[in-house]
Image (tube, rainbow, N blue to C red):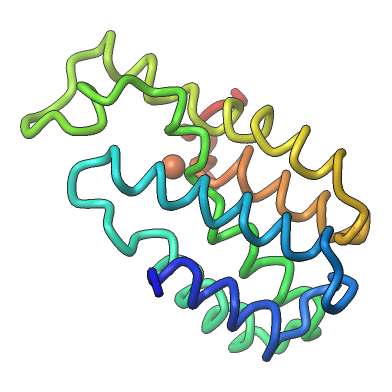
Length: 156
Ligand SMILES: [Fe+2]
């Protein structure tokens, strides 16, 4: 089983993310998210396992901050899909072995908003996640490259 499936299985069964158990909506959502992550990691150079690694670190951080378990579950899901907008970035850029030029960076910097747009239909077509969970995931996807000093992206 791919690592992403394992992470989503873990998320679903041991952390009990707010999905109605054993429903087709839950299964479809897990399959959709797993597929998005697998496609992304197959396209990007050196990205294999990145989503699961980030999710694991996010859970450790959120747990260390003593956040409520429901918040930890939302953060884990957001971390798993945080880079899904890179599906909108050309493969030649994602797989480029050297540094990116400014034009390539401009495209790369679009991936948080692209990810938010990708997830909209996925979430809108499912009723398995709570509104609070969907909002947390959307926020993580959109703002995961923002910085405290304001030099991040996509928002200025
Ligand atoms: Fe990113």
